[in-house]
Image (cartoon, rainbow, N blue to C red; front, side):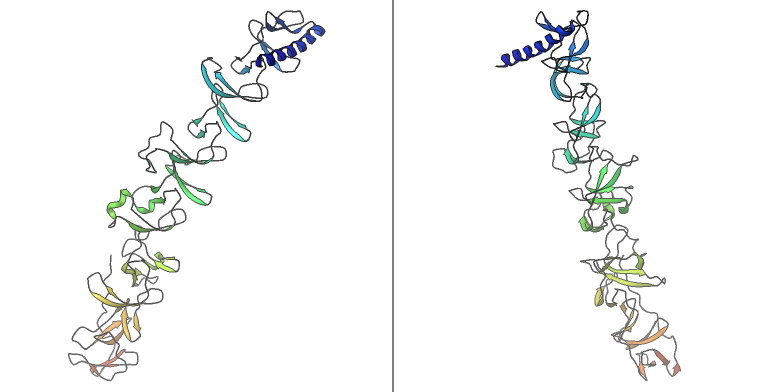
Length: 442
């Protein structure tokens, strides 16, 4: 059947060529079983292109015969019918410059010229061809693009084996197969940090991801600006997306010795940056962070502090805040608290969590701590905010008394607020001892 089709094609070509010869005494003709092209003098044409009656190009080789199934000038190809391949793909088992058997795909432009050493967009997809015109697959163009098995440049997220020259210290996904994630833009170019940076973030579909200088998506802690403190790191989950909000994690390996716990709490901003506060004891109320209506304070390690903390206010004065050991938020109200010296004391924290100073509900507080007369004294004057309050051993303020005596027989007279106005019949003033400071946690 195939022989019959070829015979019909040959007859068609012969009749077309004969018409040309008859009318012009030149053109295509069959000689010794091969097609040749005669010029106007009736001489064979060598190493030139000529059109057939079908307006398609054919090539006359060095013997003057129409070439079949071969490369011409390493840039054109003629098929089994001698017709120049143009405007499409062709799979061939010989390369242009060596004729070594090696099957590859090639693409020929409308003028028949082979696409070489360049990118070309074909039917909406990008393809890359090497210097011989071979369609490439895998990593190409300085490993900035990756072409699939069909030759089309991949776009979007792709999990691939890195280029052969990539030195991976470990598999970022720890599954043993060695593939890693890359992101390619709409033209197929791999995303890598600009300006020679080691790491950079890219927002993709509203989520931040991190890539290293080789374009590999990162997971876990990434040292953006060094490894000296937690604020120089960012954190990314196993899927590569930056972690936001509360998250428990092991500290960065390089800083692990600075942490008491193997796993601790961190809070991350929308781009994966951990919230970092001041060193313990140097915090101010401006360092507080509101999260879902609760108040938190972070230390220089990026952890939310807990326990009784010394905090400076805007006026430069200090007070106490207590942060719950479980959820780490500032607490409110009256409670028993173990101080750093091991004693347990009563504290009162106002609606903002601030340790109360002054008289509240009949008791005297200083920086949140209940102030009580020393054991065995019965009563004692304690100076708070420039006023001396008379309190008993339970911390209750003694108000409007005309003569409460302590264990030494000293007689105190107080006004309706419990402020000492007279001591031993001598008009009083600031006669109280200093209040007892809280014992803050580090």
